[in-house]
Length: 267
Length: 262
Image (cartoon, rainbow over all chains, first blue to last red; front, side, top):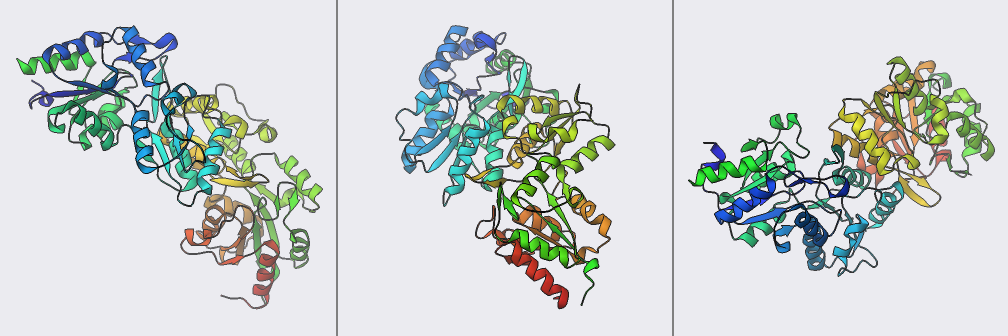
């Protein structure tokens, strides 16, 4: 029996991209065994929430895509950074200049973006041009107390079989340019994980987070008091198993194997 | 009085004696004054947006009389490094500066070179560079300036993009231009001046002043170009002196010559 399943597991947080499915052209493909693994967890009665740093589309579109791939989940059980970001902006009375994917802008629809007093950077592709980054920089440098939010801080992600630059690259760029530190909304921020834990009503010590990002999924969950399990799918690279800062509680080939181990621990 | 030939002054270009096509007032005559004093000088620039030839044309058209051998650019230094190490670069370099690299092989690249290249900092090009870095290719930064001054205000330099690539790839960039110690040393080599007899005049408190002072030179920070109030407090030890512009810097250097302050 593996160590990470020895203590009770009464809640599971799942990363989406690279754990449930591999992104790619035409919406991507479900990872072998992941669809039934989610169903198995539901059958066991273990609450599941989906923690993703996905900001390249709206939450509604993301859930629709997952349903089309064959997954079943409620939209309210999916936790992407933008809704969390909107709550923070409202609470602190901030008006953002957004440098995010245009496909995700709809999720900012109820936010006042006029006369901005902070900058939000998210994962995007063509939107992350020199001109757009320069505009964000010029706004920050003109602020007396520049506030930069980053929707996650991933180094890279996998798309269509290739590793691609993630928002972290651009967060670092703006941090370096303005000599500031960004506030991260999304994984690995503890506040972000805590919102999902609260929604499940399960304590961190009884929850396992499963993801393909050794730092942001596994390390972030561990900082929060959860167990962090790394899958060898998605952006996983062999050197992640010997990461200098993070030692996963468990390493599995894929989500299906993780769920199999959880089921075995229950019997 | 110290002999002028023992002294060397390194001078930054953009933001120190000019901003784009405009002279920073008094710089042309201050340079002539410096030339007459027989003090050695050399322009050291991290300007990587254009080749040395185009840069010289620009300075000449503003009204400066500067010889080609009086300018030491980070592009030249980068080119020499690539050549010596037989590297085939993937160049994130502005089209106007590419002519400085024409003699190098670029097919099947095995290193990434980043200069100031707004047109090349698209997501697509950055991603291409990133993929090359993942194969273990070295990351060579022509320089790592945070931002520079344009007529339209401050604009991002190559530093932020280099910093981002470093973060995502886990590869640390080798910095060729200012503030690298090697760059300052190469620039003064021909004059055989001791570092304590060298001045660096510039508007970048870290790259010009911090970098030159780290090897024992005297940094004169000008309040022109990209200078922002409080910049002098960003480095320790602080600049040797802070002046309003290049012509004030020249006055201080000439005064030191008559009555050395140290």
